[in-house]
Image (cartoon, rainbow, N blue to C red; front, side, top):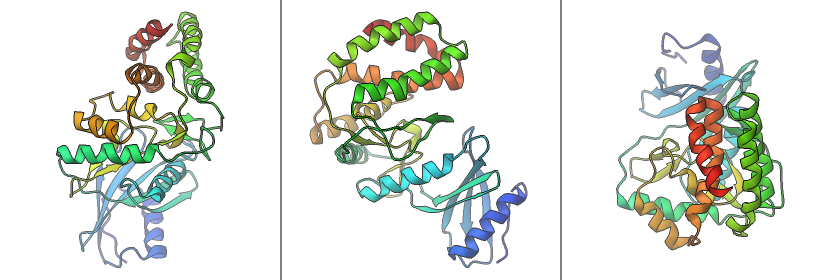
Length: 301
């Protein structure tokens, strides 16, 4: 096989991909073109296209900097796809060679969604959230952005939310000097209010990082979820995050509510749930997100 590699493709990545193609026989084309695409601040990504126009997505990063990240993504994608409820890119391969981890996925050609696309997403996410489990957590830890996410099992939502979501981020932000002891005291007051805010809901299968950037619509305008941080949690964690950083179309929320009705205080729950991604953004991007965190803490403390 002769591969037409992009000139800036690292040698180690060439070897991994060549080895992958040889083992899987995904393509027997003589030439494969590589196009570097945006992969955010963590991953380097390439679109790989054969002469038959079949494309793959290749993403890689440094396993020393982000141990187990792409393996965890592979696990999450495969777990979501296994449910057969919502479209997920097919996982085609994963390899780790020395410090390099590489994930190879189905390429999704995108289109612009219409109202029916958003309604379908609402119905499908409602279905996903009705996949349940005896406990909150997941079979392995993963990442939220570039930060490790602890998915240790817990029988209760509030304890899981506090110990495995809020507290690690607050402790990290205090250690970085981004939050103070005053924020910590507000957080302690918030804990008292949580049992009156959250309903006693069953663990729901979550995407875990459901903002607009992790949602695509394929050529048939069907929703496709990417880059998950999967765990079993309170369904309002996913719904809350959809309201951040651009938000989703109103048709999505109408459809979701039809198939899985929301409680009267769902917006309160969403505000509390969004403390987690906001704290993650404090730790990743700095103090500009602190006022939003402080506002929520004061409101419910």
